[in-house]
Length: 195
Image (cartoon, rainbow, N blue to C red; front, top):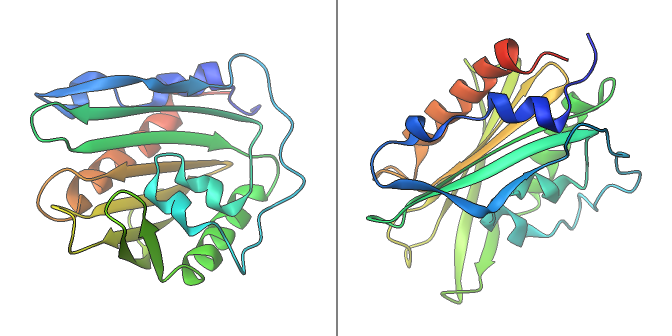
């Protein structure tokens, strides 16, 4: 089986109906690599001194500096609660996907905190290996007393793909909603994004 293209990966992203009442897609965050493959990165980021602020954004997997051959992503926002949920799938060649998870763990270990440019406060970052989703998974929790709710970021590897999600929904720093979204996309990868 070949590697899925961005156009194929789009089908594995959770649909609008998954997110529930009040959520709408943020059109500015809808992107994919289309029907062709892109050249993967040959210059990964410094994992000893990563750009920790990337953990505050939707395409946070970029903190590793690893880029795949294809991707698809979108973001959803809730107009009633200002909660945000984002999803992305990146596909890598060969054995790169497990390496991306290793790089992510190293980057998070080098980022115990990150500066929130909006509130000018310091958020705490914690990472933990997660079981029960995909081939391997890693969960990052970002919290700040200045925020109404923290955010949960989950990376799930399934074969050569890495699913990354972000959620601020709920009153648990987005933990339950992030896990549900990550599991949904990882499962959909097996059925909808055949290469």
